[in-house]
Length: 243
Image (cartoon, rainbow, N blue to C red; front, side, top):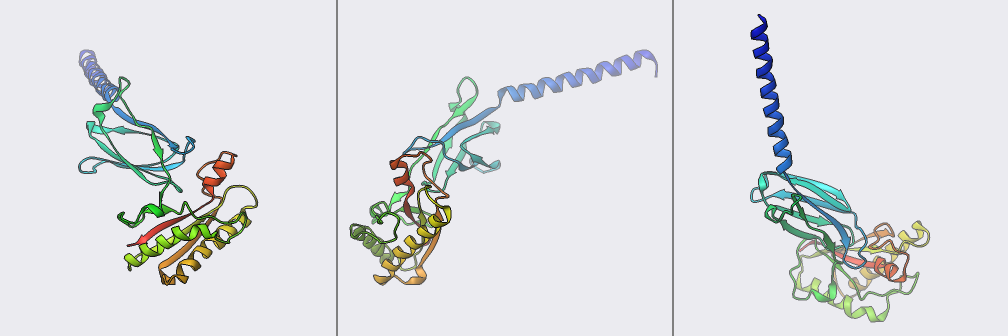
């Protein structure tokens, strides 16, 4: 190959490479990202959550993240649905629109997760599978599994819910605060959900319809060392396994 042909070939390759670099650089420069932080609506603390997203309307792009924040590219300027889930919180779902991007090409959506709905508020609600309700009026003596009589009204509403939905299966999930011995907390959370199950069964709810699970202090709503935070962490949740 003579020198002129070689120079022309080199120039052609350089032009193609430069054009490609310009094209890819332009794509990167115009890409829009969804971004935000996940916090507790009650405590304003960061919450470690599972974030799943998919493009709309066909779900051709899907992904899952985990952490106290999220960031992902919104390809082809499509809208995306995003679902945020964390233990001890009600799941949240949002729609993100690239048309709402700021000058930095960021669709910023900070998400606050609320506590599960109180069981006492669900008399006329739709009981969907997987839904988590919190027994907010359920009170135990400190360090014990004895149910306070003031809790009976709320538990009786759970009995009504079960009677109105004869195919329903629930799971009672026990949580303590983070203080004390982890093994003792796990045992205490188990004895407390067992006590709640015994109460429901005493009201003629079939034993086979009530499952139990203990978490101890492993899934706190708040990590702050305050009495309010400890109060939030001590809870029994009701998860609907089947309706």
